[in-house]
Amino acid sequence: MTSVPTPIPSRTQYVLDAIKHRILTGRLSPGRALVETELAAQFGVSKTPVREALKTLAGTGLVVMSQYKGVTVRMMDADMAREVYDVRLLLEPEALRRTVGRGACLDAARDALDRADHATDTAERSLANREFHRALYLPCGNPLLGRMLDEVRDQAALVSAVAWAADPSWEREAAEHREILRLALDGDADGAARALHAHIASFIQRAFPSDAEDTESRPEEGHR
Image 1 (tube, helix red, strand yellow):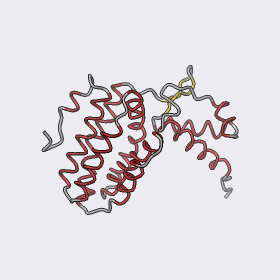
Image 2 (cartoon, rainbow, N blue to C red; image 1 turned 135 degrees about the vertical axis):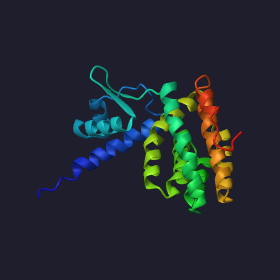
Image 3 (cartoon, rainbow, N blue to C red; image 1 turned 60 degrees about the horizontal axis):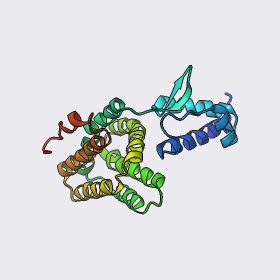
């Protein structure tokens, strides 16, 4: 059996990770054209790994491929943002409730929170914040639930990038993160879930105020 050469997939992974990092940290803004020849020159590779990386990113919803417009970073309008955050509101608090209920280790969440607090730029802080949320839901005991949330995590980052560019709210979110973690470490599964729900709902309301009222009005059980 002929084995697959390693250079091609490794180059594709390298390009994929690099483009994804630039999108999620806001260096490649929504609507930005992604030209294969330009990216290939930047990364010192042929167009093949760039093309394969862009196909993968299109599959995850981070870029859009059009026959006429080529490849662009996905634009996140209010309707799409509401869909992404609706999924988070439905799944993420429940995942955290289960994480706390089973007494899972939250050291990774604490470490991510510390990295966010000591971040020296917005890109580093953004990535740390994403890891904080992932560290809360991943140990929930249901791998499928974790994978579902992973699938919307990158698209949620696009919403965050748009919102933070218009109105940075790092300090408020950091305080909310600390409260969520405090409740989780205290073993208050329901309280942590309610705080997380309020945190997610308030963010999307701030980002898209005219379109988030319905989302905010559907509170987590026990939330005001």
